[in-house]
Length: 220
Length: 220
Image 1 (tube, chains in turn yellow, green):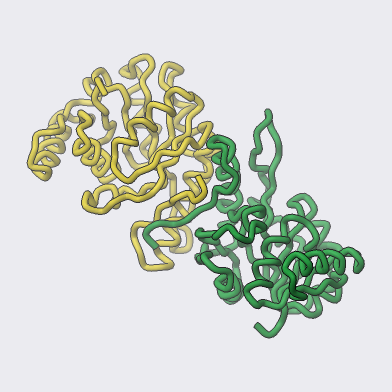
Image 2 (cartoon, rainbow over the protein chains, first blue to last red; image 1 turned 45 degrees about the horizontal axis):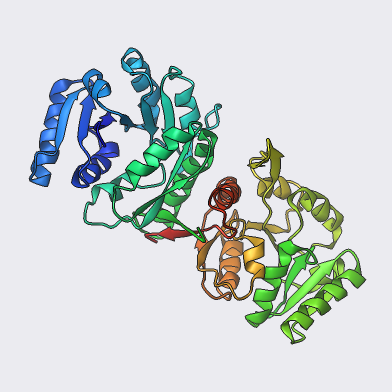
């Protein structure tokens, strides 16, 4: 990996575990934020936690200029606003990885929030300039399990995109994280399935009083 | 199990593996068909294959009168017609298990065939009398893997229904099949996720040149 991996909205729980796991795997990581101060403070917090200065923090524009693959790790409802705000700063050919899952609470249960575009990934795609290649991935890997660095993931990560090349690059990157197997899940529209699978996992967690339900495909 | 398990449309590949695996597990099995001759002939074929007279064949009406839990194992497109044809024969309290996944071929790929009801399970539910309790299950367990009796399943079976009691009964029944773990997937609407997961599995089979992709949940 020449270029660092970036995190757009990397100061929240959504990106923390991924950023730390990549950093521990030797991947250069840049935390981006609208505020340079918040980005630096998050990077410093993560470095202190790791005991090593592995992550850098910078304002989103600078992060986007330096990174090759950028994870969009904001709450699902903020995703469109986040990419709209960075519209002019996306370099040509950037790979943006959407990890979001849109949810709503209905009668006390977490439910899938249907998007008329089919999925949050497709909604985000509709707001991106053509020069950005969008990939959906890590949607079914729970953020808080990623953040428990001592917990082996032992699961699959499904990677979907309409760009085969971008899919391949994100799969190669995902392989850097131990005990995580990337699977090629096909076109971006497969996010309709992946996002719903997260709601099933949330339901199973609640039903069985667990926290880390995630998927492994048998027979592949 | 006092009452036998029935198969509505049990003469095709959809039901074969399940019927044989239940029979081998000591569960009484009745194969139903519109034609008594076809039902008997399928049961005879299965018994010959097993080398033991474990299954019986009868016309759907008689099968429905004798079974407690009935699997609807017809092609997804025939499901509504199949339940409409049996409408008057459903006994009160019957548990009907829908295993279907609606697909379509688009540009050479198998895709999910969206139903305006949300899923095939919900479409079928709309055509059932109130006295029948519908359960969605085995949607993500490939029929041909079920039919390879020497292949350990080593996967989870997701069970969804708006009747908690029916869900529990089908989960108890599923436990009879070795190396298969039933998971409570919540209300019938979760079939929207389960049916799509099968399309993802079909895609993975094609992508990785395998045949038996199925799911195991880690962390539960």
